[in-house]
Length: 122
Image (cartoon, rainbow, N blue to C red):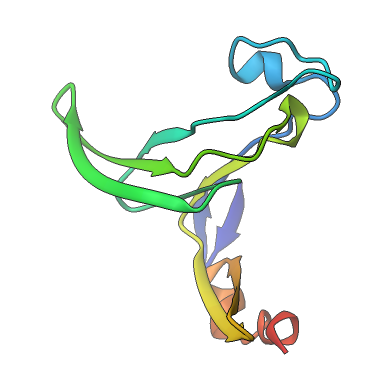
């Protein structure tokens, strides 16, 4: 939780290290055992979901009468469970590209508006 312009905001994040992946999903939470992860996150339509893979598609749906957004990511590389990460927030991003490589910085709206992400892009 954090306050932005006097409003309480909530951010959902993951912390899989060292052995907390088993609390998020059934798995063998052992670093030597690696897998490819196919991540889909169902979240509030006014939020953004991020994970290890690039966003593959996003669509609006209704779950028990409540509008939701369904975000699916490209499969990850083969990796240990503790490396899997996701976040759901109302953060916004800025982006820059150079030599065919895109870099995107996500942060609170006020941080982006105050140009606090510019240093990372330059």
